[in-house]
Every structure is written in C-alpha cells, then in structure tokens.
Amino acid sequence: MTKTFAHSRNTSRTPRLRGGGSIAPVAMQIVLMFTLTTLPTPLYRDYMRAFHFSILTLTLIFATYSAGTLATLLFLGRLSDQIGRRRTSLPAIGLAAIAALIFLLASNIPSLFAARLLTGIAAGLSSGTATAWLRDLHDDSEQKTASIRTVAVNVFALGLGPLWAGLFAAFAPWPMRLSYLVYILLLIPLAVAIAATAETVKERRRPSQLSLKPRIGVPRPLWAAFAAPGVTSFVIFALVGFYSAIAPNLLSQTLGQSNHAIIGGVVFELFCVAALTVYATRAWSSRAAMLSGAGAMLPALACLVLAQALPSMPALLAGTAAGGISLGLGYRGSLEVANEIAPENQRAE
Image 1 (cartoon, one colour):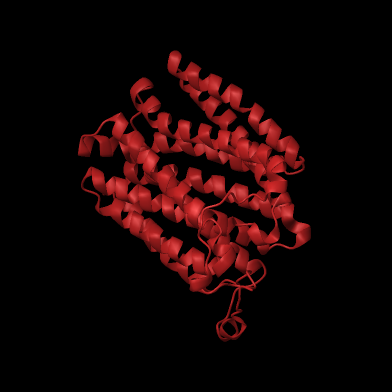
Image 2 (cartoon, rainbow, N blue to C red; image 1 turned 180 degrees about the horizontal axis):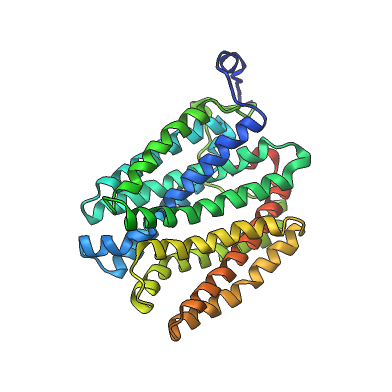
C-alpha cells in the first residue's frame, strides 16, 4: 500500500491564511501567472523589428509556449494532487520570475524561445493547481461561485497582460523591459502570500512515491461525459489563440494602428467582455452557458473576417466583443461541467 504522510505538525508552527483570506492569494496567483502568458502580445512587432525575424518564427515562438504547457500538463498535471497545492505553486511562481527575467534581458531570438517555454511550463504547473485549490477553498454549497470566480479571474488576467504591456510601452520609459520588471517585483509578495496559504491536500506523497507517468486523466466511465466540455474548451481557446496571434498584425498592418496602448486595449476588450459575461450570466445553467459559448464563435469569426476584408475597426471591435462572449460562456460552462464530474482526488489533473 502506498504510504502517505501529513504535515499537521509543520503547519501548526507557521501561521496559515484560511477561509476568505486564503482565497485572495490563490486568485492573485491565477491573475499574475496568466498575465505573463499574454504580456508580450503588444511587443511582438517590436521584437520582430529588433531581432529581424519573420511571421513564421513568431508562430514557432507561440508554439513553444503551447508545447511547454501541454508537456507540463501531460507529465505534471496531477502533481499538486500528490504533493500539495502550495508545493506546486511556489516552483511555478519561481519559473514565471525566471521567464520574465529572460524577457527583461532578451537580446536575441533564442531568448524569446526560452522565455516562452518557461512561461508555458509555469502556466501548466499553475493552471490546474490554482483552479483545484480555489475550488477546494470553497464549501460544497459554493462550487458554482468558485467556478465563476476562477473563470472571471483567469480571463481577466489574460486580458490584463496586453493592456499592461501596451500602456507601459506607449507611455513609460524602457518600452520593451519595464513591464517585466514591475511583474517580477509583484511576484515577491505573491510568493510570500502563497507560502502562508492553507494547504487543502490532506494526504501528500513523498518525492520517491510520485507518479509522473503520462496518462489520460479522465476515468474511463467519464469519457463520454467529459467529451462535451473538453471539446468546447479546446475549440474556444483555439479561437482565443487565433485572435491573439492575428489581432496585433491586423491592427498595425491592415488598420494602421501602431500605438501599443491601442493594440493592448483591443486585446483587453476580448477578455474584459468575457469576464463581464461570466458574472452577467451566472444564473445560467452550466450546459446552457457551454453551448451558447460555442454558438457565439460563429459571429465572432465572421466579424474578424469582415474586419480584414473591408478593413473596418468597428467590425474588429464587434468581433472582439462576440469572441469575449463566446469565451466567457464557453469556458465557464465547460469548467463547471468538468468540475461536477471530476473525482475529488483528481481535480487538478
């Protein structure tokens, strides 16, 4: 039988944040970890000019982030279920700091690849961990509230990155560096707060007992139930990735908008609308939200195509709003459905 051990004696010596006080640090972890994933978005055109690379190279840089995230989720997606939320979150924060430091000091193309790879690993470690932790910290009667908070905070953070970097690049010195420096400084109090947050995994394994073998995390009896939320989430985030990749080029090349703040603000619109949609439709059932989110993708794509064909800024803004509605509804609904069917000891996975 696999032996487990508790840390009751150790945790009793160190004050831990509990109740509502523990929710805030975990929510802030989601904000800062996902802010980094989109922070470089308004700056990619500057990197392309400074380091002389093509759209193909930019696509590969995006793919490097995805590869890091997917590999981490595949091998380490259930790590926090085994060693605890806090012990997984702190290394993720450390990796995010290293990634931001590489962006801060970036002087060539390989540094961008390295920074995006580490960003993907940090996001992969943190995403399931923080989502499961936030759910653990809510009572059983508050699980819908937990899902709504998770989705709203997550999508807001994704939008905060471009807005943050765009404003710094437009109105502050060191346009390609200052946003990363401020980000690194904010990670310090976050790490302190996470270290003091209550652990919710009661039985944790020793390092020698960890199981890191890749596997399909969904139990076989739940495959059919998981298919709908899984596919919905995948397709909606494919739309978000597509939008994030083309929006800066569409604004600068087709619509003649080169101001970093405008580029960041338009991308922020997508995620801000998504966060507002999450709260505005909180009375909707999980499945109704999930299906409506999938349906809203069609007008979003149509408006994006129209914006490039005309070209038209109003069409782009309308498509951005429709995409935000799709993201808010679809992600919230699919996450709630997945949370409802997930076994307690496999939430992060």
